[in-house]
Image (cartoon, rainbow, N blue to C red; front, side, top):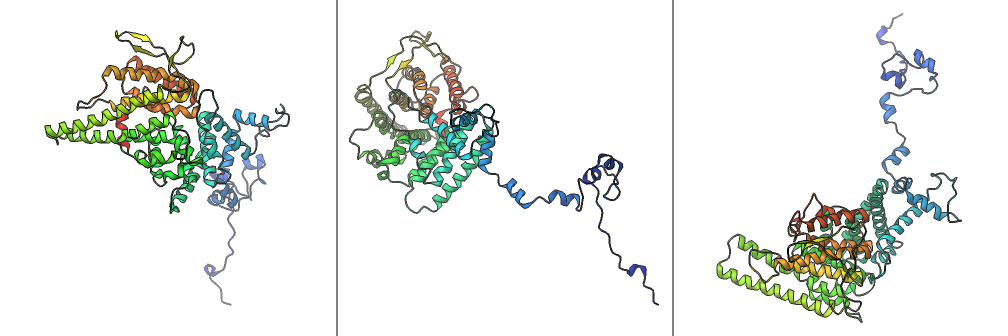
Length: 511
């Protein structure tokens, strides 16, 4: 009988017996067959039967659980974000039949469904941005009109949820809402990009409405760079629409509401835009039976200011590079003086024929000093003495805002230049900047939140007139901090705060 070598015999391999994770990490000899004394004393023999390696155990996540971890639902983030906020308790009270919740209801059971949460967050946004206050005389809130499209437009719906969650989340300092808002924001951006890539004709009203909502989001941030870049992007999209589409309905409401921001952006960019063309100055108002309101008439004049600033910057660059002879410099100086004089005459005519004859009334001074936490404005009188200035009162918000914008335009046209121009004197510029400061208190107390951002441009221009460290400059910084505390927006302090002094003439370099 032939013997088979031992090395050639088939040996049935026994499966390895692995130790418990806790003992393996401590490098103890412990397995299922011979547990260590510690495992026997704790009675953990039946709690774990290891049939895989430690590496396999860590990576063997169930597929369904892994998908849930990688694809977090925005709705889950919303409910988690609202769990510890006062808004959740208020919503629970409103959802109960008796009008108030029972005291013995636990917090987890009082969390409403996601759809109710979204609707209530949206309602908070509409209440803050579309509040009806006395003496406003502003057209119907555009945000409410855009919100009415959410049931028929997925893009508007996602952008609206993003705006509501981000703005309310930042206002409440709730990171859960902000995190959920960014998920909706990214989804809305992708939907808009897909819509623009498939667009062959003119830009749809749906895309313009979503762009409007993105602008509302950018205004609530503290980055003026992001806000200005968004305004430039939105103005670029407007070029894909014709003025005939803005004669009626939501198209016209959007154009009238956003026109002031587009004109302001063009002034800060110091370049001519399509808003100064005859079509965009006339066609949107063709079907109106009444003339333009006081603000829109002023914006007609302001639309021509960017082209003047562009020409001014071009001539200044030629002067700095010594590219002009004395004769050419006098010629260019005459052209600039003619442009500036024309704009001054247009503004003076507007003030005499429109602002001074405004039916609701005119500007008046406050009869008595106020006693609240609003910053006190101090300025210099003709005798160079510091005094407490009285504040201006207005018949309504639209006149207050329009006059501030009018004074800001005067300061922009009369900005100091190396070439002497027919301009305002320094004392006149100082008085105009003080007029803006004296109008701030009324505007802040009377205007709804959606109009507060219209103060940014006049305050920024007045900020450039005052001397750094002066009492007037300190007032503007205090006002910026006041707005941040009461309106939960840091865009004012980011441009006029104690740590940042932004020169509006340098903003054109961002584009």
